[in-house]
Length: 213
Figure 1 (cartoon, rainbow, N blue to C red):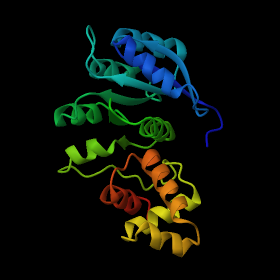
Figure 2 (figure 1 turned 90 degrees about the horizontal axis):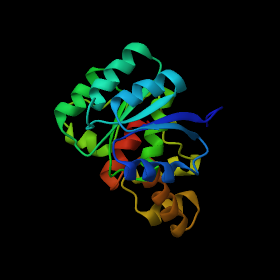
Figure 3 (figure 1 turned 90 degrees about the vertical axis):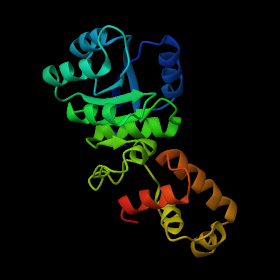
């Protein structure tokens, strides 16, 4: 999917959280963790020395918070992509993050699949807001993903299954149409949910619409 691994800088003031992120991303071939920082000052310094592709940046940190650090990084390293990570889906946080030029916003309870998807999407040049963020921002238009149709990394068969889901077909009906077993459809459906972060059929149907399925 990527010619070279995405160079990722993790910034969070909690050692335990950084350890957890590192552990869940260690076996992901498309991502290489090049450094870690515990505050905004450290993030700015490491951006200068490491030149990462993406900064996974916590908002609430002592000293210099994520929003302040992102604003400074934007001025000095405009090519670096910024993905915010927060426990809050507060509208003011999200809107301020986007205003200063952030490329994405996800919550700390995201699945491994959604975190990887978000990092890959912003590295590719897309804007990524997690499904829960989009729901919280329902009064705001969703980001345009028309240029990022492969951001989820779905296989051809998964796209076919997702198309069937969006049309309201049952797993059995999809299986019959694709000449595969119901168990295989269920397996594809689970993989689709993991890759897209979509929870139920309604959420998956919205994702299918974005992908033109």
